[in-house]
Length: 343
Image 1 (cartoon, rainbow, N blue to C red):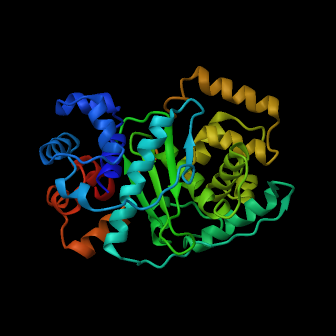
Image 2 (image 1 turned 90 degrees about the horizontal axis):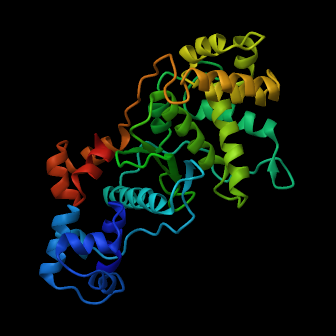
């Protein structure tokens, strides 16, 4: 459906109707009419394709895969804009279409489906979250108490597609979606401009959403708390935390643990609070120390940025093409979208 795809292309770039209209020499009203389903002249559609860098035939393909508003789970700041949510949604949505086109289903999905949590009211028992994260380590093919050298590859081996987003969306860390649950292939999208430790936390956080929140409707604040607890437990299991973190807890001690387990110092502070290793007052003190050192922007102890490979492997297996420029012609997506999926 042309109207839907024109709107999709505009939103993917974060443009208003006014901005797209200016770029193609039309009025905002003309774009509005197109997006409402009115006929579009071939030269106008060609101009839209040129400016958005989507292939002309992309707009003729029919309906995009269904990805309802509110179906994406996000790790983001509270001040993130709805427009940026929509851009991430567009990026994930077109990736779903590419994967559907590839009809490639290996590796077999190894994540648990239809998890039934032990809950008290609407809140999941924290012991259940800890146990689920420990179980997920087995599904990911990593030792129950070992550091995870490359979380991205482990998650991909479990059948989850991981993609990046190079778009300048500063207040988003990650998003996840499970199309056709429980039969489809889950997708996790991470911001490419973040340090390696933050991306690992975001990946673990979104994995928590995938295994905890597909068949439960709960408040966003509660789901975020559960996902953060899961992420901390996945990266640093409870027993490891008790064995590795000496008391009294200091930033130096946490930096040593970070170097072994690839989890950020700020996430470790929260993990220590969750496990009763520090008091709420000590957490505030440690957070103030982090801020005073400027570590809230960039922490010490380098953690490498992990590069996804699964989508690239799927596309290569289906098309035989490993060149982003040629894939732009085959997939019909903008070059930046191609790079985010396969580079």
